[in-house]
Length: 156
Image 1 (spheres, rainbow, N blue to C red):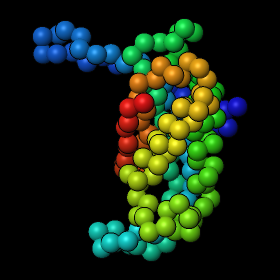
Image 2 (cartoon, helix red, strand yellow; image 1 turned 90 degrees about the horizontal axis):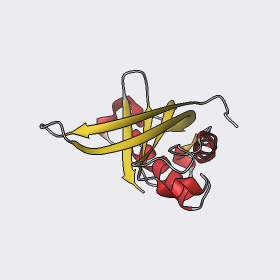
Image 3 (cartoon, helix red, strand yellow; image 1 turned 120 degrees about the horizontal axis):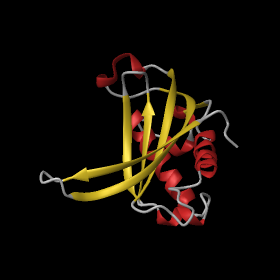
Image 4 (cartoon, rainbow, N blue to C red; image 1 turned 135 degrees about the horizontal axis):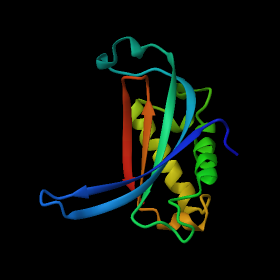
């Protein structure tokens, strides 16, 4: 079930100054979006201290050192469904009124971690299939606009 999202796959490699491969990770990224309302406390936020809406483009990148038995990082359809499920609890919500976020500044950075942690819970519960047990890491990026975004990365 694709819900209109998109996905990409890549393999990355890091080399030392001598050109020797130090580590390599495969990754797959799925994308969705979420629309929220919130306000932020603190002078640093200027006009964002007032309640306002935000639409985030959300990328979830799953990483692993070795491909699974099927030759993939993780099932794209299951990853897309899991991201959509995590975002559904936040979508079209005023986060200032969300009981879980009482007294919390729901900054883009904070929300990136929230989405990553909730995805990690779903991975641990088996929602991304048995092949997901070999995932090494996860990164979530929330794009506020075409020029600004925040990410949170974690090990699994």
